[in-house]
Picture 1: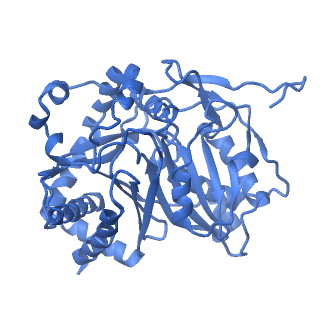
Picture 2 (picture 1 turned 45 degrees about the vertical axis):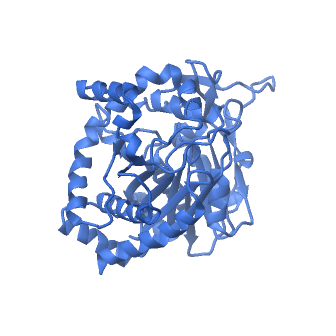
Picture 3 (picture 1 turned 135 degrees about the vertical axis):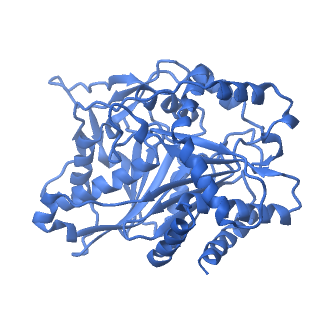
Length: 457
């Protein structure tokens, strides 16, 4: 935005990055990147194509609703004072690409491997690719968005498209004066328990053969040279089979998350047994949303933010699926929803050393072999205004998916799961070029699909 003299106004500092936000920003500054890529296909009864004239007014509405869509980073990479700064304007023509790519899997991989390089100048922390079939691929920096934020973006965009009546548009959107949500550590208790302190110290100083991590499978070691190269496989479960699976989970006292976790552990155990591996356990991470733990009011599902934690487990190798195991993990995971806040207490102790910690990962064993993230079913609500207009019949959304880009030093394998508005389950299987052999994943995907349908048999 220019002032009366035609001088470009600088970004306006908002607040310092929180603990997890700074963690992801540091990964970007080091070239390891940290983004979430999500996609959804939009359809219209009039077969309207998402052109600039159609899409830009709706995106302008989103920028005026969601403060994170109008910010960049401010400050030196290694500074403790790295902050979010509000951009005066967002130039949509610079971050929205209309491509001719028709292969969603290929386009998703390309976005995963593309760094957020210009994060401290005049570009926001997101970008969008529009495919010819009205599929939108969105990349959001992890500092401003968690998995649920991807669903919030798509649902907000769908509403904006339904309500849009603009006959004119501009690629330059003035960013309004909106506050960012506080980081989650400012909204909930992150105090460390004595058991967490003891376990953390023990894992740090004990001989490695006395630690859980030593005997756990976590894929290939982290490369010594930073290079982003990610691969994905998209797996879809139709609404009928998804409903049958959900019903089976309820019948056995499990959840979709715990059942898929147990299935993934079994399939990986079978593959490792075939490879004559000497591991005893797997190292698995399961993200947990902390939105409900925020006070005085929970963080709404419609917000763009990163209010998450993670539960780290070491399940023993087990080649046989058991509903009792799935039910047991459901109870275990539920009990961690508040305890997982302690991760922020640990980050507070380490936040001044993020750079050295991350560089120290190079050439070392990965912390996680698998991460399984489930957003649940995404519901698209119609407002009374939309229903009054009858507009909710015009635009619809399908084929949603999401995936985290943490392939370089993160988990060797990722399962990113969500339930689409129509009721199906979409699973994005993700791995890095050097985190796993391609043949391993080529074997895992069909084995996982077969195991899933065997449960329904």
